[in-house]
Amino acid sequence: QVQLVQSGAEVKKPGASVKVSCKASGYTFTTYGISWVRQAPGQGLEWMGWISAYNGNTNYAQKLQGRVTMTTDTSTSTTYMELRGLRSDDTAVYYCARDHQAHIVGAGTCDYWGQGTLVTVSS
Amino acid sequence: EIVLTQSPGTLSLSPGERATLSCRASQSVSGSYLAWYQQKPGQAPRLLIHGASSRAAGIPDRFSGSGSGTDFTLTINRLEPEDFAVYYCQQYGSSPKTFGQGTKVEIK
Image (cartoon, rainbow over all chains, first blue to last red; front, side, top):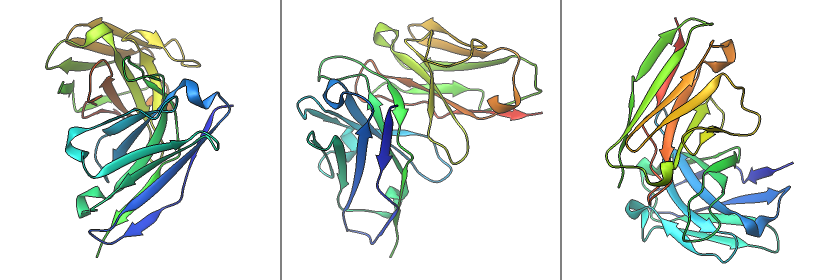
C-alpha cells in the first residue's frame, strides 16, 4: 500500500532553517512527483511547490522562492523540504503528497498524503 | 495566479440532506484540472474528485463533481455523519496549484 511517512515535529527559532523528510513506499517512486502543502493553525491549505522524483525538476510558489529547496534521494525514495529564514508565520503543519505530475510539463493532483509535520517557529 | 473562491464559508445541514459547494476561479481552469479534497480535524486532506468530475479510488458515489471553465460544484447526496468536514477545491492546471479557502459542512 502507498505510504508517505514524514519526520517528526520541530521547534525552531526565528531565522533558523528546518528540513522535513518524506519517505515514500508502496509504489514506483520515480514515476510520480511530490508536492508540499502547508497549513497554518486554523487556516486553509497553501501549496508550496513540487518536485519531480524522476529527475529532480522543481517548481516553487513564488512567495517562497529563495527560501525553500526541495530535493529527492531516489536510493531511499525520500523527499526533503528545507525552509530557511524561518518567521513566526511559517508556523504550520507541513504535508508532503504524492503528485501525479511527474514532469515539469503536465498536470497532476495529490492522491496520497503524509501524516503532516508540525513546525513551530518561536523565540 | 488563479484565485479560487469557495462558497458558502459554512454550510449547516442535517444528515440525509444534500450539500452543494461552489468553487469559482478568477480565470478559466485549463483542462478542467480541478480537484476537491475533504479534511477532518487533525487529519491530512483526502482526495475526493479530480478532473472536475472523476471520483478518486474508494470514494462513495454520493460525492459528485461538475463544472468547467470558472465554475465548479461539489455535490454530496444524502449526507452521512462522517461527511461533516472542511472541503477544499484546488486547481492544478497552472502554477501555482492554488487552493480555495475552504467550505465547512457542519451538523445543523
